[in-house]
Amino acid sequence: MSPRAPARRKKVLLADDSDTVLLLQRMLLAELGYDAVVARDGLEALARAEQERPDLVFLDVLMPHLDGLETCRRLRGREPTRRTPIILCSARTEARSVRACFNSGCTDFVAKPFDGAALVALLRRYLD
Image (tube, rainbow, N blue to C red; front, side, top):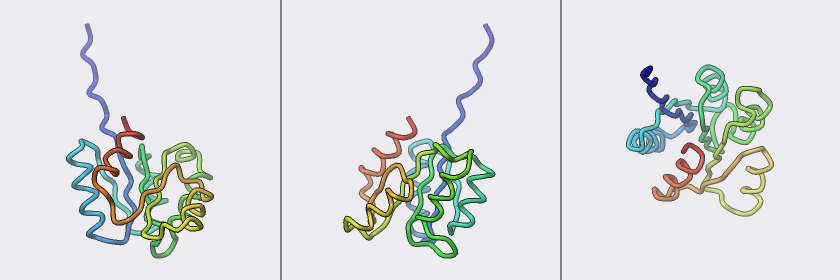
């Protein structure tokens, strides 16, 4: 019998310009056994997605240089991330804003501030 290779840990790209949000998300991912890749704006998120090939992308809508909606559209237009689950998050939860998120191509939406249990459920839905 040949030994099985260890399973690769799932990788999540976190794109947000808030250090506090990124810290909380990274702590949660580590607790759940996932690896985090961090970007502080949409342009950096595109570059990191190309390099790292994440299993899930978590984008804030309001970021400098390139917002989450346009970042999502561009990720959907690229082969490595065309089918990668993308979760957009925003404090703006009115119907028009949420609809704009889904129209940009996201897989799911979560409201800020995050509910920890809801975030864990979303992560497990798309990564397990």
